[in-house]
Image 1 (tube, rainbow, N blue to C red):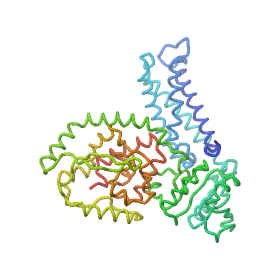
Image 2 (cartoon, helix red, strand yellow):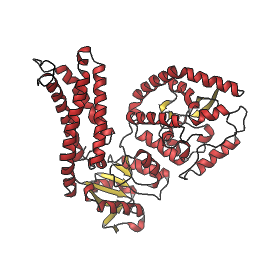
Image 3 (cartoon, rainbow, N blue to C red):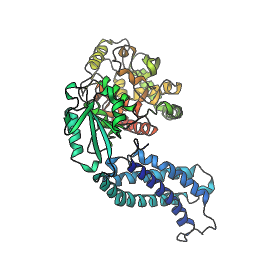
Image 4 (spheres, rainbow, N blue to C red):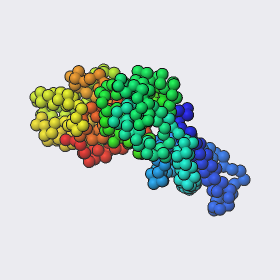
Length: 480
């Protein structure tokens, strides 16, 4: 437990939990028993209302975690922590309102005042404790190495040396590098920046058992995407926190920005894949969400259908076989955006080149000024409106609202093996790469973003992608 969750994070979690429950109690005491409000004092403490607030207090640390309030880069920064505390307590206010709304009438009485008072009290206590007590205390402990994380660095090249140099130059990080791992035989047992190379990646399990590290940092650029993903999996099996500092995942770290340490811009990975465990909940959200969208936007879809029919010959919908979860094909639907009986050779040649040149950081995932696209089709594609018929695929269980992108069967045959890992989950109408640049993201970066989504799935991440998708659709950014 202490390997995955450092002592200072556990202390912060316990402090936050205590503060939330204390705030819940004080909210109701001030409101009903202190005599400071116009409400007549009660003979007994309102236990039922207290239990409702305790429910909110119990789940609020989860909100704090999703807002990165337990990450080193936030804990040790006044401004960032203050802003995120404001956001966190705004969500606490909303959670309290929702909780009271779904309870009986007797709970709803004075619910708005109780919700505001609870959020304000909790915010005040948290601001004082975190910013003026815990932050300076933890920073002092880090510098004095009372709170220290032992780091094993994989990669003793230039990237590894630069990272270790940053760690040496900032004692407040509370990090201690205990050794390198590198597959270069010329570096065996050498000391680099005073840190010994302990062995090769094949010896990772033995080295971990011998040195007892708290975290693993991967700092390798001269490695293929496939080998890097295999190395990450190998590190995950040690059940230690893993952070990656590699040019291969720059697009993810830039778009997701989930690094644990502000001074060390990398990608912090979760230890376990929660996607499969949350499938049932995800399916319920998909069915309800897709059904509501269809009901609300059916008149708009009807207008699109009429426009397609009036502006070009052919069917309203385009249907084709695509590859979904586990490499299995299914039939998906889109509004037709192209003229019928068009020549597909240019598109195939383009996609083949796109995949072949996947290492390019800036690629084009679509052809600009494609002559096969109709006038109304160009508008629909610009704002991704041609995708909405896939809501039927979502309702049928073939797709999800959020997930990796499916592909055509002939495209699948061009994929490298590591590319196919994006099909370990149900494909989605939108996903992480669509809100991270759409057509402006290169092919390999698209796949990396999809794999990251699968490995780091959460309903909170789905919500963020859904909200960002709305912005992408409205602005049409990256689409053509």
